[in-house]
Image 1 (spheres, rainbow, N blue to C red):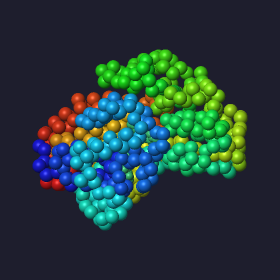
Image 2 (tube, rainbow, N blue to C red):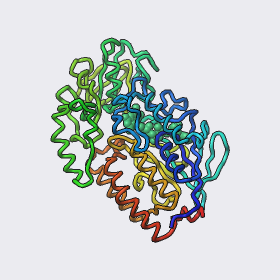
Image 3 (cartoon, helix red, strand yellow):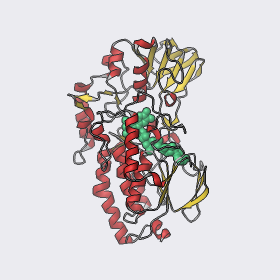
Image 4 (cartoon, rainbow, N blue to C red):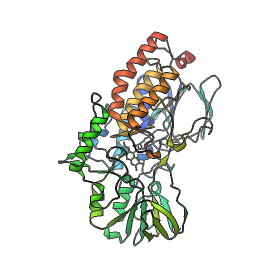
Length: 452
Ligand SMILES: Cc1cc2nc3c(=O)[nH]c(=O)nc-3n(C[C@H](O)[C@H](O)[C@H](O)COP(=O)(O)OP(=O)(O)OC[C@H]3O[C@@H](n4cnc5c(N)ncnc54)[C@H](O)[C@@H]3O)c2cc1C
C-alpha cells in the first residue's frame, strides 16, 4: 500500500529536468528542495549562465518544433515561431516555474558540492551556501551538456582552439573574421557554427571535419515542421519503422555525398541525424568545405585521413560532452565513456534512494521525456510505484539497450539514445501499472518504509 509519509527530497539542478521533477513532486505533496548553483533557472537555456552551464550560442534556435517541445501540461504560447530562439525557451521555462510556483522550492546559488550516501540509506549533501543537510531521496538533474569532450589527435596544433561550449558569436570569445577555421564534428552545434562562420560577409575560410559522417534532415517538409511527422508506433517493430524512414529519406534531404559530405559510416537513423536547412546550401555554394577525420596535427597544419592537409588559425571542437557527476566520489557513481546503466534511465539498481532525471538523448526532444520521467518519480516517491527485483531491472536495462541502442553506431554520443514515444508508452501502459501492482502486493518500497 502507498505510504502516507513521503521522503524529504533533494533535487540537484533547476534546468528542465529539475523543474519538471520538482513540479511533479510538488503536485503530489512531496517535501522537496531544489539546489541550483546558478542565480537563475534554465541551465543550458539560460544564455550566458554565470555558472558556465549553458552551451547556448547567441543565434541558437531549438531544433525541435514548438509542437513537439511543449510540456503536455503547459503548452508553448501560440505566438511562438515553429522553432523558438533560446531566449523564448528561457521565457517559457520562467513562465512554467511561475505558473506552478516552483521558484519557492529552489535555493539559488547553493550548489551541491558533495553527495554522500549514508550507510543505512539517505543522503548527506554538502552545499556551497548552507553546509551539510540530510535527505531521504536524491534526484540528480545536473544536465549532461556542460562538460566539454575533446578528441585525442596525435601531434600538436599551434593555432587557437576552443570547444563549441564556449562559442558565442562571430566576435566572441575570439574575433572570427578573415580566419582559416576548422570545425570538428557534424552534430547540430557543428552545423550551426559552420554555417554562421562561413558566411562570405565574415571573410573566413571554413572547413568541417567529420569522423563518422551524418545524415542531414531538413526542418521543414512540405511546408510543415518535419518533426510533426515523427511519431513512432509501439505496435509496429521499430526495425520496420526505421526501414520505412530509410526508404523515405532520399525524398527529404538526399544523400550527404550529394553536397560534398563524406559517406556516413552508418545508415539513416543508426546515429543521431543532424538538423540543418542551411548546411547543404552552404556546402553546395562552396562557402564551406567538408573533410574526413583529422589524422594528425602539426603546427598550423591539420592532416586529414584522406591524405589532404590545410593550415588553420582556429580549431573549434564541436565534439560533444561528458556525463559527469562532480558531487559523487569517483568510485561511487560515474559514467566512463558516457555509459551508465540505469533502469528506465532513472534508477541505479541497488540504490533505491537515488533517481536520475534527464539522462537520455531522447528523439525527438527531451522536454516531454523528462515530464514522463517525473511522473514515475512522483509515483515512486509517494509509494504508488515499487521497483522490480534487481535481476529484473538488469534484464530490463539489457532489453532497453537492445531496443534503443542495438542498431546505433557505437560512440560516446550514442550511449543514451532513446525514442520518446516508445519510452513514454512503455512507462504509461506497462511499467507504471506493473509497479503499482507490486506496491499493492508487496507493500511500500524500502524507501517509503524507511521514511515511515
Ligand atoms: C547547443 C545545444 C542545443 C540543444 N538543443 C536541443 C533541442 O533542440 N531540443 C532538445 O530537446 N534538447 C536540446 N539540447 C539538449 C539540452 O541539454 C536539453 O534541452 C536541456 O537543457 C537539458 O536539461 P537539464 O535540466 O537536464 O540540464 P541543464 O539544462 O544542463 O540544467 C541542469 C541544471 O543543473 C544545475 N547544476 C549543475 N550542477 C549542479 C550542482 N552541483 N548543484 C546545483 N545545481 C547544479 C545547472 O546550473 C543547471 O541549471 C541542446 C543542448 C545543447 C548543448
